[in-house]
Length: 393
Image (cartoon, rainbow, N blue to C red):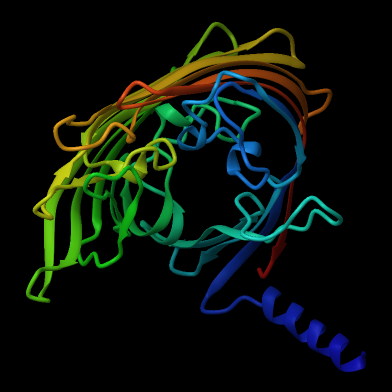
């Protein structure tokens, strides 16, 4: 015990002692604890109790083609709860360095609801920033973070770009450019499943511009991708087939009245795949000759937040995604479109403490017209916290 105490004391001294010319370091600890209760009616099929759709809105998992007999579920979980650690240091050269690390429990690979409801933590973000550079894992530069305040973490999933991944990003003023990890998801020939291509050698390249003002803020970003497919031909030779993917997204938040706002996003492109709607679409279709046909798409959402009083507010939104599948190249079982709409009421008795109710309706449709939908009533309680301490000097 004495050795453990000594080691802890040494570690504390090392953490609080400025190094490398550090003038002052601020340490932060934050996150939130969130409880969700979800009552859902699935109209076109059953949903396994381990499905992510039982925890959040996940468009690609909505059951389709059922007998129209409602499958009702009631689920409780606290998996969205998270915590983060951060440091921010001003150096003697006038520059600053910041580190950030965040973990939550959604999409845990292990766990069950039988006895302890234990679920694995998972890495969300881990990055550091020095001067104008960011290195590590965080939200894609192609993702605009003005998301509607939904109780369901999936929220307007159909309409927004949603990706966290490793990257190197440079920022100067409102301009950003980044090289990010490249991963291609493919639809096999005459199948409706998914095949990952893990042999990329060219990163995804993103350029973005952010415009801020008293009225709100708007961002526009473009992405260039190299879609790839590695396969073995009839002679046993490994062949790497590639195609170009690209896209443009515009979104932001515009204030109106005293405290209300409108949030929006519109995205279009060819081969965006995993960047949209939690990988609702694949980036490309594998053709009979093993070449690739990028899948086009258009998506977007609009949401309105209205404050009724200082403590009561509501959010209403609608979102959609439409694929441009070529019926001559893909079978009818591939995802073709999805949309959802929701409205909520949130009460905050004190800052950082929220209680809310939300209703959502969501629809998924395949290329052959087969569809499925669900209705969900959700209650959430959330407490957000943040603490900071300074060391050095």
